[in-house]
Image (cartoon, rainbow, N blue to C red; front, side, top):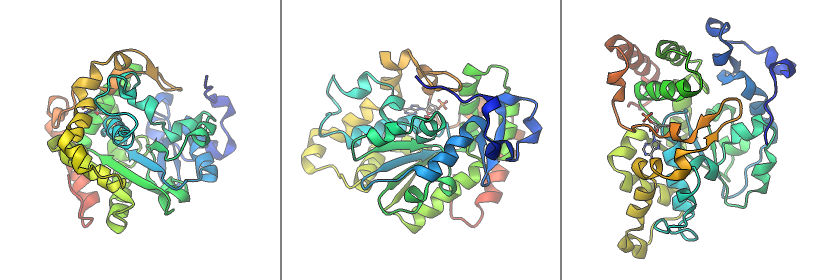
Length: 319
Ligand code: A3P
């Protein structure tokens, strides 16, 4: 069992951090700005502890994303790709057929936030882990160390904010889409600003393509087979001719498809989370590109597009 630190035990190092004044009255969206990154107040001590004590090992793989950018899918695909020798994707006993992908790939930020980081030490190598934090606040052994490979996924922020609202709404129904949208635009959503989050990994992937793989949700949806091959190649485990002939890539894609995962018992029941409980099924919605048209006004879309245009100008990155 995990225990969430209560507000009254907030360490002084966190209590003195800037807070998002606009939403200070709504503690449910309360964020603190730590080293230029907006983090949920309850998570801030964990981020500090992670910086101090996490040490990457040779072979570590860290998946990174802004929440609601396709993390669950990337976790499933990477887990299935890395484990395919011991756990063939077509096997009825595959762990992903009985466990939620978040139970297969731990969120480092959360484990540190609840003081359960020893779980990471106990994992056998090569470890597969996940973070929602930007590169700039990750422990140096992840962000700059030679040991660790990073796979990043991002998504058109218009779809990301709609997905985020649907997700958070399940646990906190009093948060409006407008309110969520404002936090994303002002950069104070968890791990934000989202543009810095994306640019940090984008630049790192350009500087060190063998260490940081940069993917988008849209590209993954367009050609999942190609992206899984790229992923395997990047991880130093390319598919052999025999595997290609046996259709292993397609089996991984099928195993990890939204339709398949969504309909598994493990993902229809149970929940994740400590500070808030998120039901397993809330990680699987419709998984399409452009669902934002059903939720955002043209003005909202224009505003987010303009933010992206301005922030990504000159970076070579565009959605
Ligand atoms: P929607 O809310 O737009 O449907 P994250 O995993 O980062 O929390 O992101 C959740 C989003 O990814 C949701 O988007 C969800 O439906 C989608 N998703 C989850 N599993 C998926 C899968 N296996 N394939 C494609 N999309 C998936």
